[in-house]
Length: 125
Image (tube, rainbow, N blue to C red; front, side, top):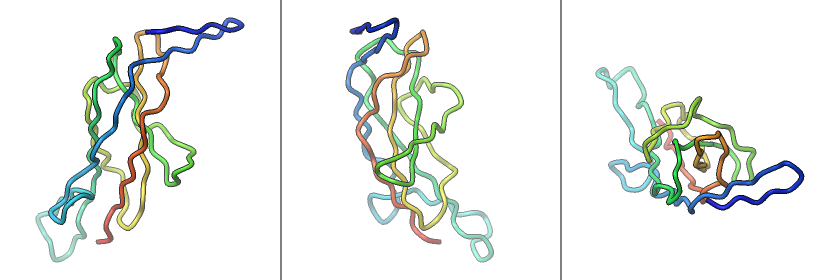
C-alpha cells in the first residue's frame, strides 16, 4: 500500500479493482429477473449482480456505488464495507439504466480510487 502525504492529508492507493460482468438474465447479459409466485398479477422483480477482483492490498472490504448517469454523482449503496467480492443490488427499477463502481476500504477507513465503471440496463416489466 503506497501512501502519499501532503499537508496532513494522506491518499491511500490500493491494487487495481476490476468490476466485471454485472448480472446475467435468461436473455443474455443484463439483469436477473426474479418472478414472484403469482406471475399474472405481479411484475418481475429485477436485481443487478456485481462481481469484482479482490484488491491486491490488505482491505477490510469494499463499498459499492451507483449512479444513474455515467458522469456521476455516485451514491454509496453499502452502509458498511462488504467483505466479499460480489454484491446484488435489489433496489433497481424496471426500465432504468445504472452505472456502478467499487472502492476498496482499508482498516483505517480509507478508500481506494474507483474501480472501472459497469453499465447495467434493467429491462422493463
